[in-house]
Length: 151
Image (cartoon, rainbow, N blue to C red; front, side, top):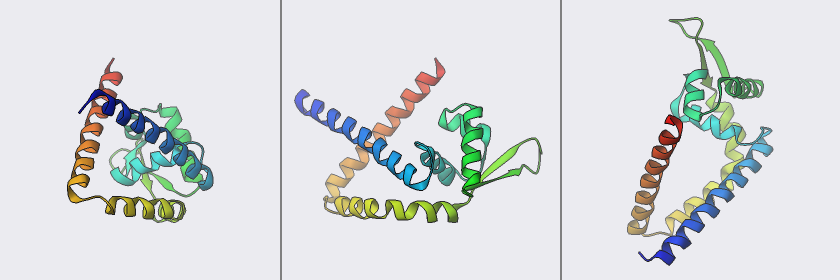
């Protein structure tokens, strides 16, 4: 691939990332949450229950910031806290999936539909190229995160 095309794709990738941030900010506002709080719910939805410390490690947020985050989620009935059975000092955060989906599914409905339609317009070969790109780009981002966090 020539350098000009690589530069163009890099710029498009940046534009996509910036627009994604703007869209998620708009979704969060509509859901009554600050900033990208709702993206942190995604960690809980994918990982399931976890401790506040685990969520802090996963997100890179401080434990204090995670406490505030969980307080906001709990106030909106999106998560619940419970003590670990083996150690009552440890608090487990559980997502309340039904409430999360009820809040966010309508906000993402059109976006999801249009995105699926767009993906459906690609050939299997093109879709495989997208899959390869996203898998490898995610790997590179995770390496970068690990490098930055270990310094």
